[in-house]
Length: 172
Image 1 (tube, rainbow, N blue to C red):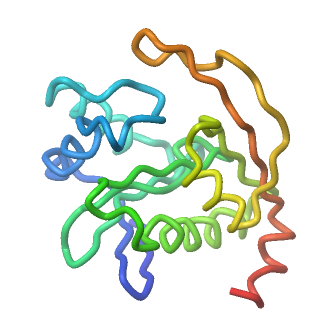
Image 2 (image 1 turned 90 degrees about the vertical axis):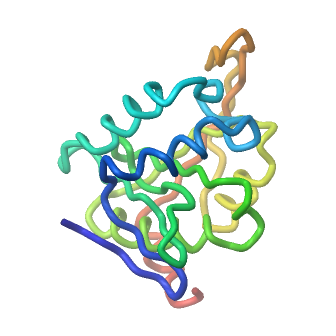
Image 3 (image 1 turned 135 degrees about the vertical axis):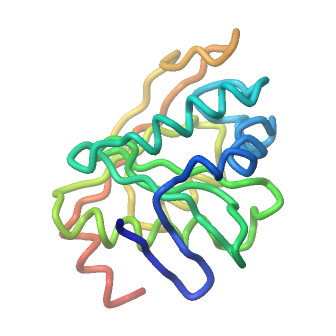
């Protein structure tokens, strides 16, 4: 079972007992404002989502629950290679946790893969700034890519080259 550590965070595989914390994140409209689904209305929706995270075949993806001081505060990883994704509870925004978690996820994932990609809602300035700071570059845009509830959302596509990421390690 792979785990990752940073100065402040512990990243580990998801477990069934993560359900209350995961539901607190996925049911929060602030956290899911630019997510691919509306806020989860029921615990069962979050249970199904968590079961999918737990069942990821290691050859297809590697997603981590992120803990700070023993509490689950979010998730970061590759749900399906090479696409990276992350979501954190709003109580923990603005403290650098997403960048810290993604840095170790990218170190691990790009050690054996040529690239990481991301699909971000163009209104999600915070995520776009974070990914740009990590070295991702925009590769394109498309309108009406996600129907979230009754709202069509657009996409900004980004890419991070593994060699560029490794070369940037000296500057991190």
